[in-house]
Length: 125
Length: 138
Image (cartoon, rainbow over all chains, first blue to last red; front, side, top):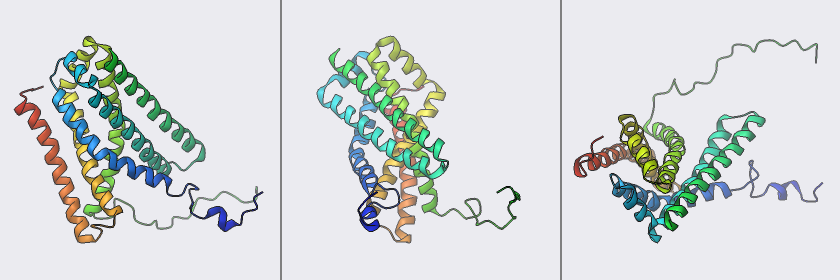
């Protein structure tokens, strides 16, 4: 039981009970990804055809390692938020929906952990 | 409950769906934004594979490079680059809309056509750079 009035309970939250937090985090990620994605494509293009050791040396540079880490984190965060909306739009049964939302989160964390582990290993080799 | 016999729903006319409508540019770009977003989600696995192969050592990196150079790999990579170019450019269009800019039908149609054309151009330019300028043919 809540002593709040029905109005106070829903104010600023909307039907999803989460307010505009999701929308806002999605936009912040999008803004960050504009320069980061452009950097990623330029870096990938520079590394195409390079030997493994020179490619690793490039990504071991502090600025490049940090930029790649930021790109991976921002992209996977943006991805998890976006795929969440796709799941919520098309999967209407509560059970499968929750399972897919959990898997979506796990996917982002696992891929993110793998990428960051690889970056650390490349940087400290 | 038991008395309520389960009857098949009456065959009422349904509201028209995607296959009925002519595709306006704004609808096509909206759907393409979602499709490219899903494609890029799958593409994160390629980025992870690339970084892990790079961390693991030369023989793993050679395997990754061989798959990437294979014609099938090149087609997948073209899809990845095209998806990234479209999602990036159309994402900027979305951010402009969030600021209330370019929301009228005429402008939205024109920026939609521009985004489709520019993303195709950008993806082709990336591959032209790799094949032509860097001279790396698959």
